[in-house]
Amino acid sequence: MSDIINAHQLPEEVQNKFVPYLKKLLQLHKEKIVSVFIYGSSTGPNYSPNHSDINSVFIVRDHRFDILRKSLQIVGEGLRQKIAAPLFLTKEYIQSSLDVFPMEFGDMKENHLLVFGEDVLSSLDINEDYVRLFCEQQIKGKLLRIRQAYLTVGLNRKGMETLLKDSLNSLIPIFRNLLRLKGKTPPPHKMELIKQIGQEFGLKDGALLSIYKHISGDEKLASQNIEILLEKYIDEIEKLAGQVDQR
Image 1 (cartoon, rainbow, N blue to C red):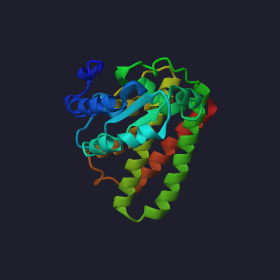
Image 2: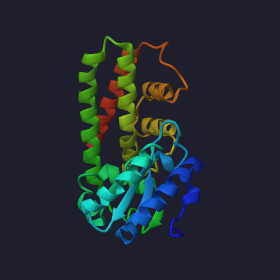
Image 3: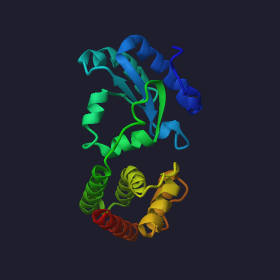
Image 4: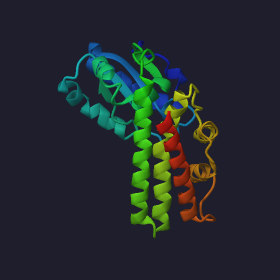
């Protein structure tokens, strides 16, 4: 398939896994596929072979169920190589869903690599009001959930660590979109992203960075009072929610 493009820009392990996978799906579906792109950590420096999935989107001409059914075996083989089941979307679906999924499509637009066909993402026009409202909803929702979850796991240190890690990881896409709303380009590395969020929104980023360093394996939380860390973390996320609400 000589129509595959930009594969050399992928991390070598992603390229070795995804290109044969893509060739099989292109051969199977032929003219039904408009474009294919990879998005997320597998496109660049945040890719970790042991932890990262390879995420992809196939833009198809229509949403016939037959495309999914015929793809089952190839997708199953990909899952064993940490190639996540792809999203099959149409251009019409994307255009009609920008108000519902502004953050998701904003992330894809910002961080994708086209490997086949037409780049339908670069020209997407995503309304900033949709993004701001979605970010506010997500941040406030996560504050509700982390308080409720604390009541469930607050007596279990491992449960508390998991709660902090899961909560911060879920906020990373929101941080990226908040920086875009301020006209900034989000840095690719998560630590730099957290630092920039602290600077732009006047947060004390110590708690967030401590949690991130624990997630990345650079620093353990064993010497810290994890309950105090959680309290500081919640305080900063509350400040962030308040600022987003005032935009």
